[in-house]
Length: 266
Image (cartoon, rainbow, N blue to C red):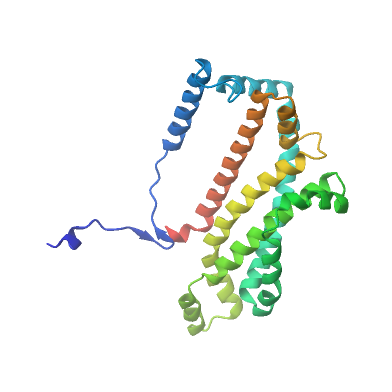
């Protein structure tokens, strides 16, 4: 038997190679990292001015929870993130699909999207404050605008990458334009759209912090800004950890959506 036939078979799925799930490895790596940080800061290998003890950060979390400040800062941030990201993602997916399907819309909007995509969205915050005021409107607008452009680019790119053979097959079976879009184009583009959504929501969290650092009494960004101005590393790292956990939760939610919508790939 040749070496080729002896080679281990490669499992495939509709979207590519089938990944294996190794549960627990990420948690172990996280625990090891925190343990090393605790040992290093406790025994003086790492300066307290550089990194606070993880145990002290945990005590800060407990204090935040007991005093109720955790929810006073977290709930406004979640509200701003959900509203702003929902607006940006919804409009972005709609515009991206239209660009992918209609050549005239593509010709008109792609140059505009290409022009505004590289603009640092944080730099536009003063402009949004002038337009929408210093209250919630400017924060919603910044997050929505920041998630809009990457969602548009990811969406029309995903539509473009749908296998044209499948579209021609649908046409040969006499499917209508609407049926081809609903049954072939949108399901085929969904993996790319969801991948782009991960990036868009990560950008939304970054812009949330930036928006809350200007003109917000409560919010994770305002909490981090206050802690940084006082050089309170325990509170500063507590805020950073909250943002990190928020990012993990967002990623897990998108993963759940992928498992529901992309069951055909398994």
